Image 1: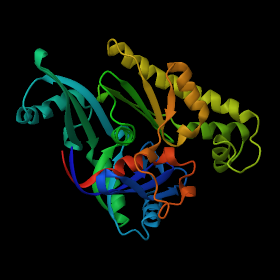
Image 2 (image 1 turned 180 degrees about the horizontal axis):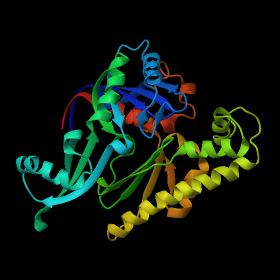
Image 3 (image 1 turned 180 degrees about the vertical axis):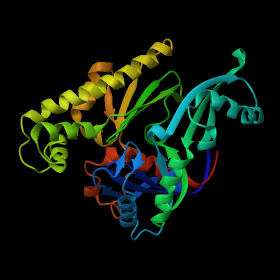
Image 4 (image 1 turned 90 degrees about the horizontal axis):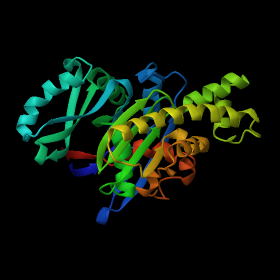
Length: 351
């Protein structure tokens, strides 16, 4: 991907909050985070990836961009409206692939092709076998139109729509360096209602999967068992958050829910390992708001027997202390990963 121009402002509309990040690139590729914004959304604003309360999203975007000069943004799509498939095709040149990809998409995408936007990227060419691996991506046009429509209504100019898995990968590779040949890295982004797994092998995406489960399940279970409100349950989930002593039942509730989620993650890792030949996982990096729940990282680590770390997006661009209040980022860096991955995109890109 060749990139030119200015960085876009990254806008991550999640199911319980909107995150905004702006990165400035200086001389010699030095990056700084010059803006970070966070706006909580009311419950049920977004359900299963569908916007139920567009007014709340538009209002949130307007507040976050109230004094902003830059309105050119990159957004992300995720969930059931997006399909990512790695396919094997006969070796061919770019124009042949362009002609053939529609037919291939018909075989692999469970949507009507008239309803989706298709993109693809060659991952590997295996000349000796006359084959190549291609990453095929399809996103529902209606969902993308709904998403960009909200931004336009808020006075913004959407220039790029990226996918969750790839924004996290972008953030990881810029912050930590691309995985070396032979290395297998698992990126797990745990949002409120969706967990996205992206496994990088030999520097490219080898496997992706979405799990319809996330941090909201922990909050809901604490609410249900203790008979308390959502805000209180959310605070207890994150260790009290200034609300006094956490009831003794909370750690057990958290452990039970995260163990179920870690089990689903491990099933995906086992499937990948069973189908990828002689590979082992070298690193696991977790991001998203739920990555702050230590019990989740421990449970994934115990099951996978791999060192699990919190993905730190500030390795991509440390905050400019004159422009970003360090307190605004406190406890939120794991949530900022997608927005910062989007903020690396440029306003003039050539694929």
